[in-house]
Amino acid sequence: MKKPIRKELLSRERTLPPPLVLVISYFICIVIGALLLWAPISQNGAVSFYDAFFTSASAVTVTGLAVVDTGHDFTFFGQLIVALLIQLGGLGLMAFAVLLLSALGLPVGLPQRLVLREDLNHPVLGNLVLIVRTIMLVALVCELAGAAILALVFVPELGWQQGAWHALFHSISAFNNAGFSLYSDGLMRWVGNPIINITIPALFILGGLGFIVVGDIAQVRSWRRLTLHSKLMLSGTLALILMGCIGFALLEWNNPATLGGLPDTSSRLWASWFQGVSPRTAGFNTLDTHGMHDSTALMTMSLMLVGGGSTSTAGGIKVTTLIVLLIGTVAFFRRQTALHVFGRSLALEDIMKVMALTTISIVIVLAGIFLISIAHDSEFLDLAFEATSAFGTVGLSRGVTPELDGFGRLVIIIIMFLGRVGPLTLGFFLATRSTPRVRYPKGDVYLG
Image (cartoon, rainbow, N blue to C red; front, top):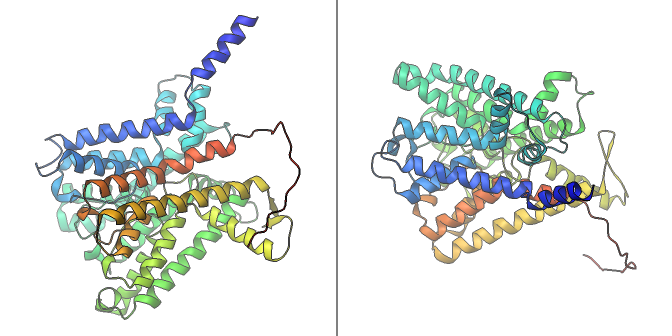
């Protein structure tokens, strides 16, 4: 009886922890993507391996920051590889692996489920395969519907073949909150187009809400029966969208470099709406981001740092993290010993997880800004904007990324990677509980 138990313990010790498996998987995917993008069939000869590696990292982490022109420097095959990398990174590598195993009729073991749980940032192991199928179905329906609507804009201008591809590419990029565009100026030429301004935001808002929230809405269709997570995500998302849109309009209305340069009020309103929701890790732009006032740039950075929702294609510290932080702050000033919201209470471990996520996120962003500023003489706000965009996996840029040297690009790649994989890895360690063997007497610490 002792030998089987001993073998089982040894096998557990030799098994890599799920976060490490996840990190290695994403890194391998980035390397393979870089090699494919560097191949002559994927580019027109102007893309170096370092450019291809940066593009692959940006696509897998669904960021959207670019050092080359995706639509011009890559061939159709290269653009197809970028779209595939966006899909893999946005929906999760393990989700595709589990879907493939299920399609082949192979069992999904506990190790695969553990890694999948980390990739989806899901709290439990149950029904993971069903969740994966739901994710794939929601993504497929949304992306195909988005492509069909966007084709109404692209096909008349570019023809059936190229127009259909541009519609599908931008639909995939939008739903996965990637922000990659096949146009060097983003979507600026359609700043007043209602189809673009409705469809693209609808896709990245749905993708940023999280698959659990979308599934919850589809099942219950009643606010009272929604889970606490769904209620927090929907209310928080609405508040942030209103703040972003109204704030952008008030700050930029008379700025000739942005809203003030548009021909009519309708275009200004559409642009305010689009730029107000885009920092939620989407990364698309219909205006020149570099022309924004410093105050608008700071507001945009705040929205980029928050990001979208858990179990979604978005990055950032997440909307629920911000809400729990605010609830905890209000409870402190009210001298409350417990946190309550929507008739439910929050555990102390949730507060500790939120504090850890926020602290580490701020440290990563500040460290990235510090390292980039050492080697570059660009405007500090521009460098800070790029670093925040990289961590939030947003992709909005003030034009500094292509000008960065090798060291600066490496820092951005690391920040993008940590922004995508870091919170998932941290979640594993926070979910691992340990009971202290020794208890110490309470001490007093004077804070504030």
